[in-house]
Structure formats: C-alpha cells, structure tokens
Image 1 (cartoon, rainbow, N blue to C red):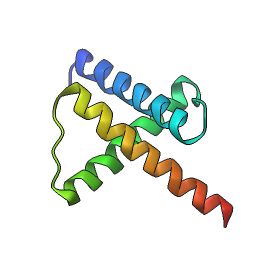
Image 2: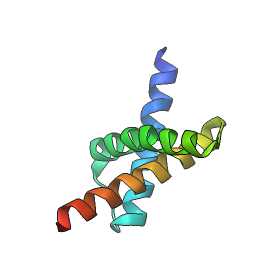
Image 3: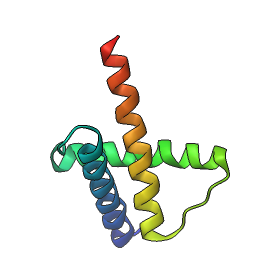
Length: 83
C-alpha cells in the first residue's frame, strides 16, 4: 500500500466512523476514534455484505459499507453495555 492508499484508507475510516457516530449516538468520537470505528466497521460491513452476497465498489461503496458496519458495531456494543 502506497501513501495515497493509506491516506484514502484512513479518510474513509474517519468519514465512516463519523457518520456512524452521528446515526447511532448523535456525535463523533474525535478523529482517532472515528478512524478506529470506521476501520472496524469496514471489516464488519465487508463480512456482513459478503454473507449477503452484496458487493459495493468504489469510494462511495466503501464508505457505505464501512458506515453500515460501524453502525452495526456500535449497536452491538450498546446492547452489550446494557446487559
């Protein structure tokens, strides 16, 4: 991965984490928190979309996949905290 790919990876993670934070909690988690949530969300979203047979390509598809995965991750964490 070159520097441009790394920057895009981190930017997509930050955007997805911020969007998921807005949907699930009403606010972001700071730059580093958004990146971490977005990257983990991309992993979760890619896994879930793979199980469903859905393939989202391009930058927008990556942001959508990561955002949905991050929102799902935040939902699961919120449910686990309530227990």
